Amino acid sequence: MTDNATPLVELEEVTKRYPSPAGEDGSAVLCGISLAIAEGEALSVVGPSGSGKSTLLNIMGTLDRPTAGRVRLAGEDLSAMGEEALAEVRTRRIGFVFQLHHLLAQCTALENVLVPALAQSAAVPGEVEARGRALLARVGLSDRMAYRPGHLSGGERQRVAVARALVNRPALLLADEPTGSLDREASERLADLLVELNRDEGVTLVVVTHAAGLAERMGRRLQLRDGTLAAMDMET
Image (cartoon, rainbow, N blue to C red; front, top):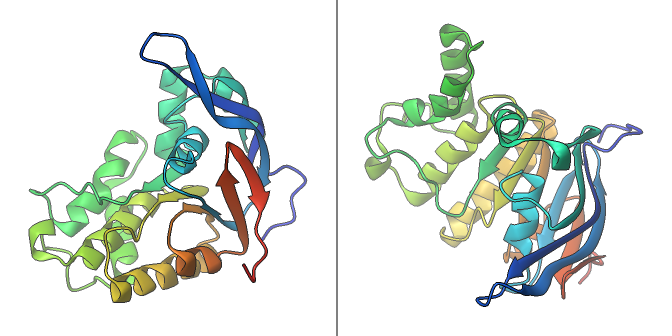
């Protein structure tokens, strides 16, 4: 972890409410959450279903906006940005891994990894492809680059998704239940991979998960319950 005065990610009194069916303010899913995440940190967030873990991750990743409060990335106030600027942040600075891999069925593993780079006008095709190939080799799929998702196992598809999330060299990698659809062996391999990438690539990692084994691999564990975050004892 890099010892920086400015956290990579900072949430300040973040609250999120969803309107009720009648159009009134509903109950708060997130209640005044403040959190600082250092550059290079590995953090897990656990909690019961419906506790708001995915909402919290989506707000960090600018896929959703808080009802109140501020979100900063490397000191920049994301809450004040327009949609076009936020799309640029997502493309260049944040990588996402979801429970479902969302790979394009008609594309090869390598083509899927390169998709995020298509949005970067400054990208050099040869360099991007080299990066994609290196990442697939890094996640153990050097012999699967020409395979389409239908010919890959669930664990292999998720590893392609991880490589895709890293192709643009993001500072922040957000993973939402990344092992939720995998068997035990594939889950353990993916957990190993995420820990190694956090260490070797230096990417800041935030994982929300129900999987205790994956959560315990992160350097810091938090629990989300009743809209608030609390630190978890590592022996819990």
